[in-house]
Length: 185
Image (cartoon, rainbow, N blue to C red; front, side, top):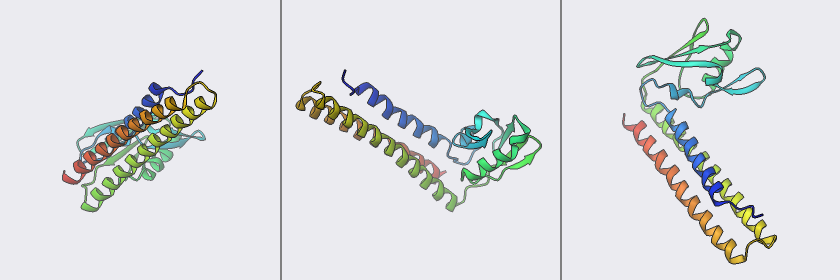
C-alpha cells in the first residue's frame, strides 16, 4: 500500500499553522489575556506539563492575571515556569495563587515580543518543512516499491511543494499581523 497520503500531509501542515496561531495568541499586546500563559510549561511530578494542567488561569482585572495552583507543592515550579517563559511577567506568590500584574509595554519589550512572534513563525515553518520532507520520502519509497511511476512521484512532489509554499506563506502572514499588532498598540 502506498505510504504517501496528501490529506495527511495537508492535515499536519494545517496543524502547524493552528499551533502557531495558538502561540501568537499568547503573546501579550497590553491587556491581560488568559491565553498569554498557554505556551508556559511547568516541571512537576518529574515531567514537563502545560500550565493549564496544574493550575487555573483567570483575568480578574484588565491588567492582572491570576494563576490558582491546584497542588500547593507545585507553586514554586509554576512560578519558575512562568519566569522561564520569557513573557516579561513577574509572578507574586499569595498562598496557592500567583498574581501577575501586566507591566506597560516599553518600546524595547514590544520589539522583543515582535522577535518572539518571528521565532514562533520560524518554528512553524520548520515543522511544515519537516512534513514536506516526510511527504517527499514517502513518495520516493512508493516509487522504489513500484507502487507509483516516476511521473506520479514528480506530480506528488509538486503537490507537496505547493502545499508547503501555501502554509509557509500563511505562517509569515500570521506573524506579520501579530508583529504589527504588537508594535502599534
